[in-house]
Amino acid sequence: MTKQLAGMYAALMTGLSDAGEFDPQRQRNINDYVLRQGLAGLYVGGSSGESGLLTVDELLAQQEVAFASATSRAVKLIAHVGMPNVRDSIRLARQAQKLGYDALSALPPHSYPFSDEEVFGYYQALAAATDLPLIVYEIPLRTGRPLPLPLLVQLLDLKNVVGIKFTSTDLFKYSLLRKRQPQKLFYYGFDEIYAAAGMLGTEGGIGTTYNLLGRLYVAIDQAVRAGDLSRAKALQMVSQDFVEALLATGVLPGMKAAFRVIGVDCGPTRAPMAPAVTDAEDRMRAVLVRPAIKEWLV
Image 1: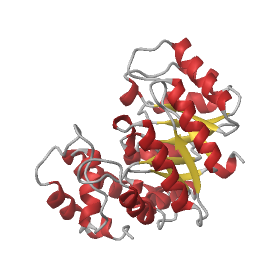
Image 2: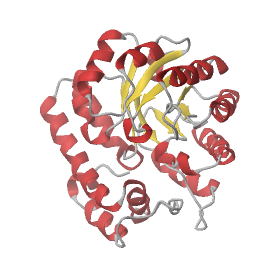
Image 3: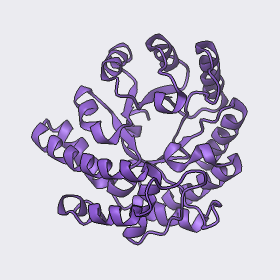
Image 4: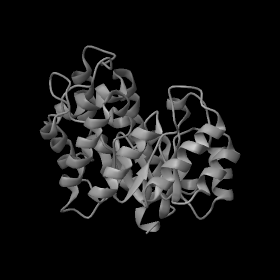
């Protein structure tokens, strides 16, 4: 079962109404596009889905819509359930198991400077709450601090924990962790440098821009695995060109602007998140017509 979870996953974005409420139809619009790209599956309810700005009830509803969209397709579903408190996380985890999700993942507890012992206790409780495989998460950008290597080793030893989503530029730490836990699954989370982590060994990636350019990231992963580093480098540069433009608009507002450009209605981001510029759609349109990027759209 563990190896079946390997592959490239879109960190699924969230469809919202013009008023900023969760919108099932706009969620289906996103799902339908993403699921046509040949990815291994969807990572539902994570940071790319604005989970820090959604209610638990909205995240539960999104789980249901994503599951319904994926039912007839040969894809895997990972439910991100990492809330600041373990009670909400377990509520999300248990519904995901009931629906038929393949695995769980979770940010460490955040919003406060939790100790290593508190982080360990959180994952221990979550891992025991269901029988689903659990993927822990290293993302200092969201939590405010990197988790120490010894703690990550301990977390990967917990029952039901099968791997980690590693979203950090500390690739030396990544390598040391792989060396200490070679039997676990390692997903890399920075889209723009996936190939670098891939060359150090990954079982897959989970990323925001996979929503739009999933085929590109599948091709990068295939090139790395085939040892075709020249092709991997060239394709990663295409990814970097897109990400560079995206950073200027704000990542999630820019992604939603890009979806509007290609005719996928997914709504705005939830306040207070807003575009960093007033011409986000024009900027994304200028990027998406570049031949090297356009060829990867579906």
